[in-house]
Length: 193
Image (cartoon, rainbow, N blue to C red; front, side):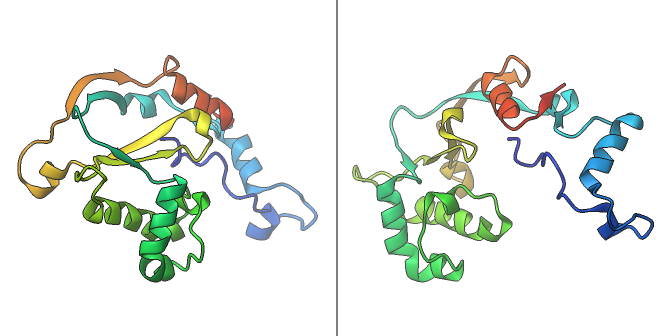
């Protein structure tokens, strides 16, 4: 959820950007912007505004009674993905050895890989019980103590065959009372307003 909020821009020296800065000046663009933002009434870096939180909600869902999520980062899954996709998707993405690192990466260069893997699992995987998976589960790239992430496919909605058996129980706001959000912000050195 916090991935798009980049805490700091790159540490580019001001002298690399502007002619009127001395080459021996060690100030960075990030430091200068961080200094000037509050002076002009803006929120400082590493801040999550109340407005950002108010535009989002957490949803508690009731999932189908039976079904499975594929642990895409499990050793068995990585082995199967490497075997089945090694000569196609992995080769196209120039990934010689698939690891947890690639599967949890937010790099634009690996977006084709991660979405391709999810699509392959959705479209081609049949589980031990003959059913298709409900979705995938994977750990937070910021650490396993932040919990698991679930991506669920709404197959009937996607296929135009009717509503999926998922019920929204209750939406709730995101704020200082939301422990996973507070933990993630704290661990990334961000402030919540």
